[in-house]
Every structure is written in C-alpha cells, then in structure tokens.
Length: 91
Image (cartoon, rainbow, N blue to C red):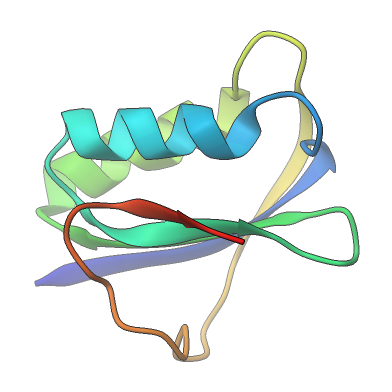
C-alpha cells in the first residue's frame, strides 16, 4: 500500500475541511484519517493506490468552498496512528 501524509496550512479549520477530506477519501476508497492540529493546520494520513492518493493530494490543495489553502507540506515521519478503513475524522 502506498501512503500520503501531509499537513495543510491556511484557512482550513471551521470551513468543513475535515468533512471534505473524509468524503473525498471515501469516494476514492482510501484508508486513513484527517484531524485538526492545535496550530490551526490540518493533518491527513491516507493509504491506497498511487492514482487515488494523487487525486486526494490535488483535492486537499484546493479544499472546499470557504477554505483558503496556503501550503501543503509532506510529512516524512510515521503518522503514529493506523490507517484504518473507512477513512475517518479524528477528534
């Protein structure tokens, strides 16, 4: 399984960003999770095919209406949590 682990910066909390990511990831058949960070950023960890992960990467770079994504940063470290199916929102 291939993985994607990114942090998204900008106006990404309070705009339905986590719900948007969860719905897109589920539509793509990915496992994993999305969570808000105390820094105001959002962290995403996903597992699946390279094609599906690329589609998710493109989606989070734009985000839902109301969001303003400034930067998407790849994270090298292990997400620290399992990439369970179905894709979920961590609180």
